[in-house]
Length: 133
Image 1: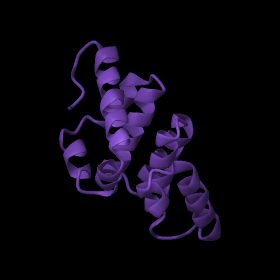
Image 2: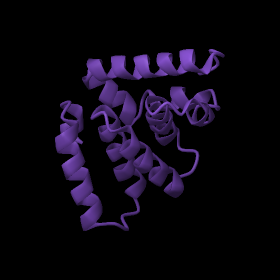
Image 3: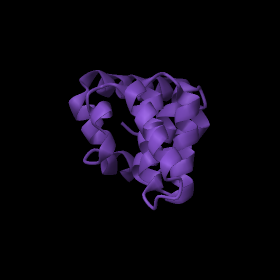
Image 4: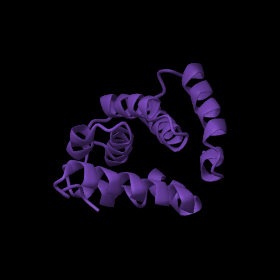
């Protein structure tokens, strides 16, 4: 987590992947997958990020932080319908501001801007403007 908070997603990826390899049945595995999903998103590898977000959701369905990362990765991949579906619940974004994603964005303002731009691009691409702000 320290690498993520310091804005070092590549180092975080190595650490979290090692953690998953060492303990693949960790009951908190959904959190490992979320951290990997966010790290891949911020490393400009949205496909891998989406894969890990979906893994987190397979363990903990409807989890707001994983839905947000899935939406961001989907939007970055150009899959606007999937991004919109992940953000269908208006509380999804609100619930993540105090969580892991909120801390990452607090300590890394450039990432906050990346999230904002990704969501804005998705809104424009949807031609409906119905993605939550």
